[in-house]
Amino acid sequence: MRDSVTVHMDAAPDRVWDLVSDVTRIGSYSPETFEAEWLDGATGPEVGARFRGHVKRNGKGPVYWTSCTVLASEPGREFAFGVGARDKPLNTWRYRLEPVGDGTDVTESFELADTAALRLYWALLGWARGPTNRNGMRTTLERIKAEVETIH
Image (tube, rainbow, N blue to C red):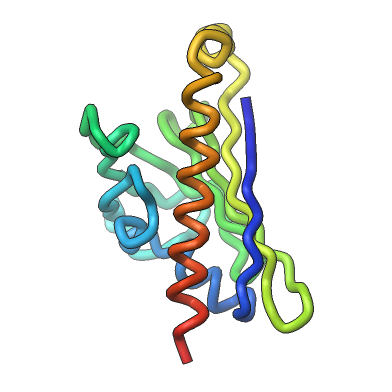
């Protein structure tokens, strides 16, 4: 009930982190989440900050808003957020940045909570949703790569 994709980017970790941690830019990268906004007066990626994302599931629908909470925010290293309840997120999305030579290996991952309902969901629909998530993560990272490698 988890997966990840890694893409190497010819950019410093801090430059990549600036893009992955700015949730208001997600619409430029993600094939499913087309916009996001900070909530409760939050203005940036601090642990505990909340935001909501506007999702078009599978790129087709349904369309809905989902609330998220920042779980990790370490500039140049990691950005993670949980989807759903603050104290028990249903899904955790994470970006880990590892310096490699003059660039950065960026790993995007998801991990579903270990609940009976999500285990059943994954057993029944994981065969379809898993590749969708994997392809979406690759698309997101490739779009970030294209942008960060053109910033001077």
